[in-house]
Length: 327
Ligand code: NAP
Image (cartoon, rainbow, N blue to C red):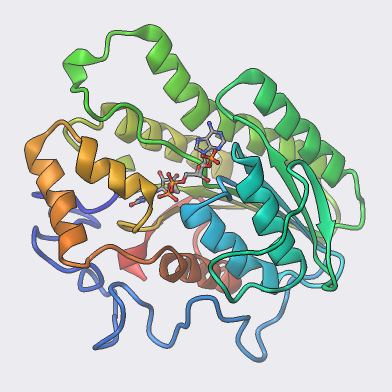
């Protein structure tokens, strides 16, 4: 999920190091923690930056946190003929975001519209925004999400596919490894956090197919936890590691698909609230508490902006793990 105390290897940083000061992060003096130089979160594409026409963009976990910030940043990047499909369980939050994005009003933090829970919204802008409220951790929800994907991608006019597998959960971090003996609990965790991302990605790539001249990009929202063990976080760490390997295999098998695992850094979201209040391991809990108290959590939109830049530049090696602090 983010830098752990005592993990100084690879992309890790020493305990007590402020976010944004690790390996080449290049934070401008006085900028928000982790802010990329010259980046204004929520700003439309820079003048001259090309918008993506005829793009089918899909974001899971779009109802709040990082997924919602990313949807707000991606919407202005999507040009004529594009569609944005938003997935999560919370119908009302999705509908609100869909209404906001389809009117092109991406500047505020609280949308005012009331779109349908499962449906589409096309406002004054040219972007078609659809939302599907589905629990990706259960077969029925996954089926409905897959059906919506297939329906969307039947449209042969799309020349670009961008799928962001962002939805995720921590699992019960109040438990240690030795407390994890309930097979149903474990299977439920992996079903949502690993299997659903595999199924949705497979469904999307098959439905889109190999269209001549098209571009297909799949993003896996990863974490430092894919690389480093965190006490009390056995499910989360192993889920992130498994997911990352799945996407590395995809990159090998399908060289024409662009695959990226992006670790967004410690974000100021609901997930971090759980991390600092529920983690069983006292040292880890204090670490997360400290990040929050010292204002070292990263705003979701700042990290989402870095991901957007990576996608715009499109120069990452397919299958790579790129961390917020590496950029
Ligand atoms: P968050 O605030 O908890 O949001 C999680 C999103 O996933 C929400 O939109 C939630 O929507 C959705 N979701 C949860 N369970 C779902 C289910 N069963 N079916 C469908 N959607 C579901 O988390 P976040 O901090 O934004 O994290 C986003 C991604 O970044 C995750 O993959 C996380 O592992 C990763 N990450 C986070 C951090 C961090 O510090 N927060 C650090 C590194 C990596 P509903 O509740 O409406 O379903």
